Image (cartoon, rainbow, N blue to C red; front, side):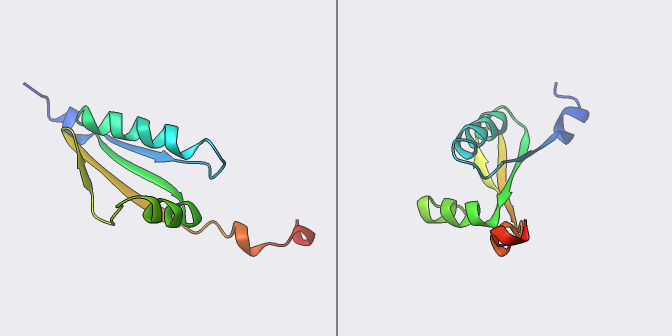
Length: 86
């Protein structure tokens, strides 16, 4: 019988927006969700736009295996800076 505490596990994954970081972390998130863990995958909004364009990602949690994966994107302000500001 599954204990009550195992139902409360929530994994929060935050991806660096660099090339080669998003897909491996997303695969890990899907694998964890398929094993019964709630997963929130987070990345900058610029990555979120690319992900929405490439696949059918919604703002609603998506069933994967025994649990869910959801997507939360944040504005990182990185695109607002000029090289001279750094």
